[in-house]
Image (cartoon, rainbow, N blue to C red; front, side):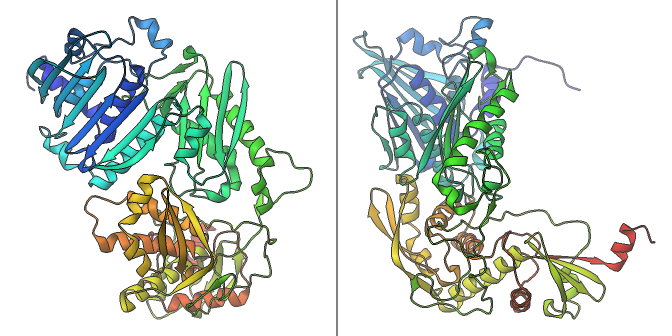
Length: 604
């Protein structure tokens, strides 16, 4: 065992940076929050190569004197708190005094700052935590911080950075998150010379939210009890997203990614929100500073409430009131006299797979899966229900994969259909026991191969023109991200054109998608593109988009199938090249042999 020794300040800063500076978005978050604490009314963020090459944050805040600028490079030097009791009455976003020295220790760092009363500003240059220069500099009041070559002196951290598009996506999320509760502050984000976000100063939070959620209908929530006040805006459960990226939560004005708050919101939506989907919305929790601890996480993303039961109860009741009275309830069956918070809602069923026709013109692909839509058809005014989004999951250990049975000579069509349970699983009898088939996963695999084979074999998947083109509003960043993939998406059957102000007009969708909602499809595809891995090739990216399209075109849970429909599904499954798993990796079927069943009942 080596001798115990005190670490150097430079090494300590690098260790601290490992907790605070995870990626370019972490740098932007810390610098923007410093600008907000400095009373800025305008904040500009500039990036190059997703923040790896350059991050620059400029503001018109209070600025610093020469001595203050030098002091801010010291660890735990801060103007936000003075003693222990201040930790329990925080009103600022920053308070530890670790961000600036941590960032400066893993980058080539430069700061130019000037107070409103000083005649001349100060410029400091730091290289990997080592101060290289201090000089006077002419500048307007405020602070301009430049971070170059992030992690240049910590190669392991540099190696784990994602591709520039992914890092940029995380920065966009941070800027939107910080901008929402501060309508009086103007924000602008530029990347490689292009303006991605521009939020002029507004009079109200609602106006700022409308800028962040273009084209999305959000409904206000409000309530309070015992000194806690909740406000916010939430969207329809029919317009959920595949990720929680557009669900923003705040505690006393501080943006947090707190699992407790996210779970409380999801619990409030209950069964109205499809499994695997997340609502769009903004939640503000205001309470006495002493009733919440914000010093429980290195990045201050999580908090601890003194009375969590009160918070979760308020969230449930406030959101429940909106969900119980909002216009989207026309899409649900609700028993007479049920209260606003009733969670037992069941959807009126409609399959997202439809035969040719049904509001579209143009070429359609043929299919034997011609599900009967008149049996459970919704009222005409009912908005189309968003399809269930399936996520990869672990393979179940109990029971053997049905593919092992079927690959040994049997086929899905050979199985004897017993019936459907839970309006999700098809139960079949086999010669050796029973097989349970996930109807959504099965249909998703079938549609995935149809789209993929058409795209690879013909260079273009069949599409269907929309009789009424659909305009989809996106943020400037999302629109920019989508613009580089229009040709590939059109080859997959999804044809879109820019429509101004970040919007796109959807003119056709893949034929196999039937009556799937174009807006939800586009938003999920944007999410898939932005979440891609650093090493992902174009073909891998296209494959994930095809999987998303297949999910949108498939029958969902809570859809009742008749005997002939189940037979048709199994027959199509036999024609699939790989019928044993959906494109997201979930098993299509599982087998329970007689031996498994006998062991369950202790007969062996």
